[in-house]
Length: 268
Ligand SMILES: O=P(O)(O)O[C@@H]1C[C@H](O)[C@@H](CO)O1
Ligand SMILES: Nc1nc2[nH]cnc2c(=O)[nH]1
Image (tube, rainbow, N blue to C red; front, top):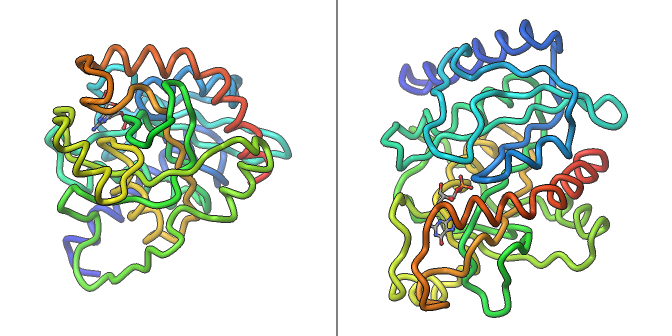
């Protein structure tokens, strides 16, 4: 790897070593990235764990977006599957891409072979309702960038593991699938942009996830994505959008979503 590529990887390895020391777990099995308003779901997944403030780990930034917690929780679930639950840094916070995917790379360096990426998203597809969980079947990376540097030609077919989507449907057969469009943000979309996104095949729209998924796949992880429809996308209701509405919808669904994710990580 070139020098540029090495630094992020070295930082992830040192963060993983610090996590192992602080948590007492030499390795972790599954990582869960909690999207906006998803933090209350963490308690449904596993309460008695060890919390490590991210500001005390190499390479992490304290979150600045409401609805994102400031610590990583290490918790045992089911048959001793050790989980890492973490928040996220968004591209729109003005940080370089390697910062956005540092948590993912740290989880991989900590031994996680599976990662669950959750997010709050605007619903584009007809029939979606606020509070609905949607399995991410594929994504449109509209960030115009990549976490990868150099000749790292990573295959992204089946990026959002069809095996794990089958596991999720075994838990709740009513779960629908959708294509997630990841945009830079932090502004929401115009109604015209939502019409464009629908035309090019997007069912959901958000401001995260896609870069994390690519980095996770490049690190050899199996990826599962779950969106929470926290609002219908711009122009579909005639109402303005705001982040507080996103957080409230996430909060109301957190308990149910936490139960789904707990069952998923036990079966994954
Ligand atoms: O972190 P996620 O993608 O879950 O949060 C979405 C995107 C923005 O951060 C926020 C806008 O309300 O929701
Ligand atoms: N880009 C985008 N992100 C969101 N996160 C939650 N809702 C939305 C939305 O409507 N658009």
